[in-house]
Length: 265
Image 1 (cartoon, rainbow, N blue to C red):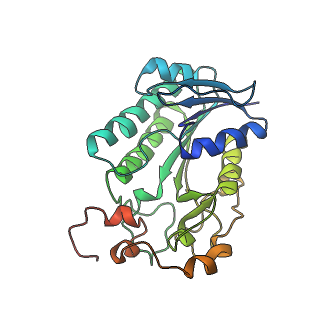
Image 2: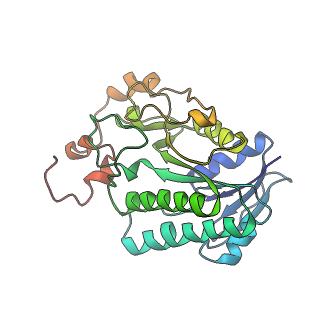
């Protein structure tokens, strides 16, 4: 059985993934941030610390086959913070994977790497990068780093461009971007179980009728999303859209509208 490490285990998605993976019998080591974690089961290993520190990375990755990397800054922040957490930290993690012979990394990329595309555009996974801020730019860089470590060091990567990973969609944009928690867990199980993936960029999105991103490019994983935001559409569309008009123009929503100084085009 593959031994799996989960970084960002104390974050929003980490709190969903820990019990779900453990319930499915995954041999899991969960790495939190600066606050110690309590094991959820006797079998779960835990550690914590700043991933820019090689000793912390070593504790997280020693003896691990697959890393699910969910750590880092997940919102738009000033560039120095993004650089430290999402660039310096990510490179430290990949170097740790190289030191310890980790064969595969599942990298939490983001739809914000392409967020300046218009909502009327349907995108394949090989679309142009159009980051909607420093956060999205860091995910564009992260995908490049993952490619580098595959080409030069043979570390496989699945770069999953996560949409809106929520238990349920709550606003009109989510009708296109929702990644249901059940689909997220199924996706990660295929990332763990698939024998070989090489380097793969895939859309982290459910089977939404209004999706911006089809096909999902998940075929090499043998994964097909099952959830559909359309099940919630009538309820959502009965309420006002919380996004300002300019944010509705771009796939990145409010991230794209932030600090925008030119008229939409």
